[in-house]
Length: 388
Image (cartoon, rainbow, N blue to C red):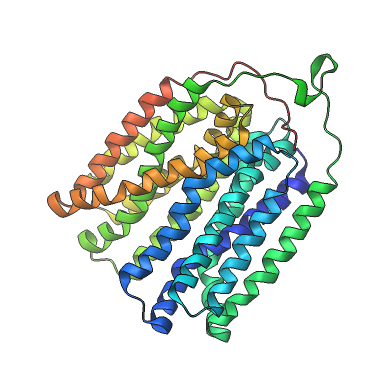
């Protein structure tokens, strides 16, 4: 594993996702500055996140067909420049286009960045993917803080400082890609590009279903857990926010260890084990009445959900060795959005039957996800380094 390039990939992921992570914190300022309605404001989030996620597979295919392109630095540049321009435009539709263009930049970045990470991770693809994804997690965590600091310092035009950050990072990545060392040879003297590997679409489709269930659990738990603390345990909004921070930090630790364990014991095994251990944690959650136990269960749930992240991403690439970028576009983008779209359904369940039934449903989804992981076969080859 090339540690320098992996660290750079993680840092670039941070710089890209800072833009997406900052948007929720920017929205209240846009409402105050431009008098936007709540529906218009929510449309900005839709333009940024959903558009990004749904076109990621397309950019993944383009990255697979044109592996020498520089989608990774270009994506960072577009995402950063577009979000920076939000502070300088007055018209709503100009803001809408800027926010949407930032999402497109993120969509362009992620599949290509996953190819880059895969190519420099060597045999430790799980560890490399974990380190790469941690950058994105940190970007989402610090994005709101950075945005608020810039706006408070210099009103909305302070967002313009996101532009040089994106430019510097894009130049660093461009330079690194241009000066990567030659790739090693595959067995029998064939180059990596000449090594023919078969896509396993059936296994990949099964894995996507498991990813969707994981996404539903992760997103809906983050949405409804703070509401559960406030409604059932009379906790403050700040306490609920702290709980989400704990969830995120535990997830980062789970992400790291999940990748390390997957490299050692196998990707499909770790996915199955984490799903299996997740089931009892979700089953007992609605019955816990002690806050200490609830927080302990919260930490374990976050750990298990995130520990499967890197193994799933790498497993998808191993099932589709000829379409690594497309696989990343599905596992990092489209399937996550589908999980998010399920949140209103559970919201209706909560309105009709109560919040407890949301967590009953999540334990069912964990069980269904585990059943699909049992159908996942081991990849029938050892993937070589992906050619950039």
